[in-house]
Amino acid sequence: MNVRLYIWQRLTAALMVPLVLVHVAVILYATREGMTAADILARTRGSIVWASLYGIFVVAAAIHAAIGVRNVLTEWSPVGDRNAGIFATVLGSSLLVLGLRAVAAVVLS
Amino acid sequence: MSDNRSELTVSLWRGAQRGRYELYSVPLRENQTVLDVVTFVQRHLDSTLSYRFACRVGVCGSCAMTVNGRPRWTCRTHISSVAKRGHLEIGPLENLPIIKDLVTDMRPFFEKWQHAKGVFAPSKTRRDAIEQIKPDSAPRIAVDAAIECINCGICYAACDTVRWNSDYFGPAALNRAWTLVNDTRDAGNAERLQAVAASGGCHACHSHQSCQEHCPQALNPTASIAGLKRRTMSAYLKGEIKV
Image (cartoon, rainbow over all chains, first blue to last red; front, side, top):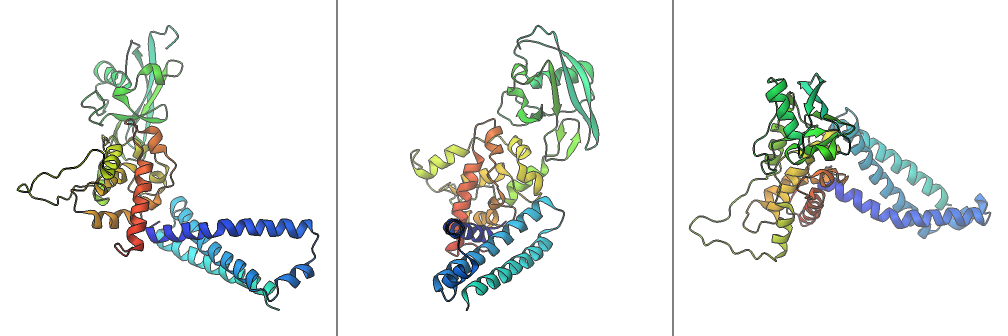
């Protein structure tokens, strides 16, 4: 890992710390209150706050996971830096697309 | 040792990368070091045994070996502190190619010192006045904490990241780079920070702290590496280095 990847990984980790706490709190609240999918969608649709929160979360997670997996591959597998980089880029892009698609599904009406 | 044994059994690595442990019996003596045991085998039991030592007093850093699974300086390691039930297993250092028996090829270790720009780059000539460095200045305190490395290679042998990533410079080289980063007389920091910020440099460290745990000089290379991470990050964000 070089300094550029290091900064991106630490930055996204720092961003995700509060977001994970919010996410866990949301899960606990939604389940303890017995909210239905319709109840949840009624609150998230059209909400800039939920769109921003989970949008940032998805972008940070995609970058963070891709860099981490790249590191694991370069250290623990025979694939070289280049192939690990290609795999990590594909993985990060997939997570980004899937995650943003899911965010769009709950915030766009 | 608490029992009344008169002999110690010692398994010594024989051969090169491919080899095996062979068993020897050595008289047990008071205040005997691991190096004394290896020397006894070489002088009295098998003169073909190869090993390295020089000073015998923990200064030169040449006698490091793997003793019962841990890298140690053998001249300063007493048998009484490491023998288990009257037995020792002594092998060459890990993470380095074995030349023969207990002797490893230290070239990768020292080449990485070069890659990490672990060489002093003078900023003055012999005609300039000697630079005054206050002992209580922050850079000098940082240097003091890391300067007593004896290049024994124990941290390199103990490091998981070195084991996994052959490009990683290792704790000793980065610790050395950190002492030079804090040396106010040095003029090579732009190149040095560039070198340690690249792949294989300080950001590959996982902070497992095995280097600190095993360093016979009680240094903390992990802390030096953390210092390099902070310094390179700042230099990168200011545009002083590129990767």
